[in-house]
Image (tube, rainbow, N blue to C red; front, side, top):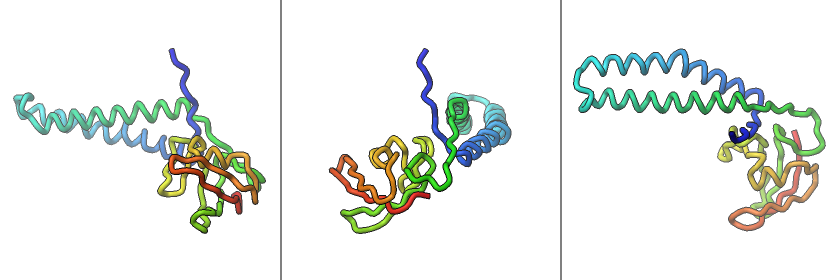
Length: 157
């Protein structure tokens, strides 16, 4: 049996997952069961597109339920330290990008929560990993598939 990897989640994201799980189990699952029941009543299942669609939807929902349950079971919620002087998971970090001469805010999160387009970067990503443990005014070099990038940490929230 393989050891499960712990999933780092913020308290807010864990609550969001728990809400989604509740919805899928109590609302979505019964809706799909009803769709399958109705589609079965049409007779021949071999050429029944409604039945096939409902069964596919059921498979997707059950897969999502299993994934969320696994994430919750292996969750480690992060405690964000107030007034931290070094970057950790849960912090919002303002960095100055030397190449593009601009500042950006990134929230360091676990991989399950990452969404780079919204500024949520994984603690395991090249940028996230490079920022961890650094302090204000530290210059950080990040190796990415597109080459090296340089950031200066301006603020940690």
